Image 1: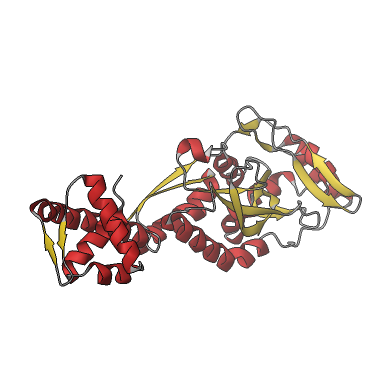
Image 2 (image 1 turned 30 degrees about the vertical axis):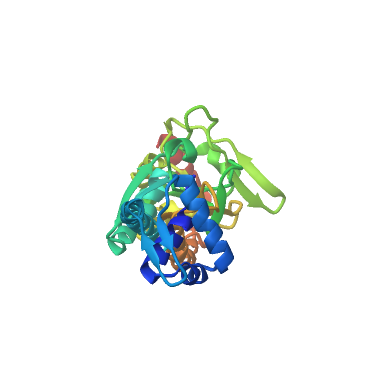
Length: 328
């Protein structure tokens, strides 16, 4: 098998007219250069150079081989340049996976901005609330909220997160504010239940420790964005990631509840298959996401800060409020 380094030695020797000089240029001693040239000619079964103490002369076979070597080495150089350039520039197809709500509000816009900054890049964004197998689906980068379950993947945290109980002002005006987890039994709870899984439980941090509620309700969805839409429309209480509902809270479409009993902290994580040989498009997009989430993290988390609640009703007002809840 002919080695590329032997081809390079041959082409360099013809260009410079000296095998010893070609060897030194490529880091070989004159003796090693001579042995390599002999090995090349032996592998091919022909003499390529007529060598004398003063100069090198191409044989007929050598001239033909030299022409082909120049073309081959040029192709190799071009291929190496394309690969090395790809390590510094985002190009090709970047496949990104994200949950629906987070993807629509955060990942989709970020991917579009990233693509606009890299003209050689194409971006495909797949949105699903189901857990996608990155290796099977050919996904470069996935963004998820919560713990990493697949040990084959590398995880980097983008931002802190937590779930927040929330409802529309119209719902609260109609049904009243829950003031403790025990009050949730009297409210319309919007339940998230993904295919093949139990309904998502609601966990709050109380003075006595974590308190978990298994919500039940007449509205059940396997899509987080539908849960959010139903809550905004005033159909009940939702337990959502703050990254999904921060904009609705800031706009007054939703109100955070039980903020003195926050849910346990979580994180928005970015996942990818391997640290080794990570394409530039994936590596640069991960860095881009980290910068974008870091810039928005404080404002998003602030949306879950405690809000002033109306005082509990008293006397006749309390009885009227109870009767209104029963009739709602």
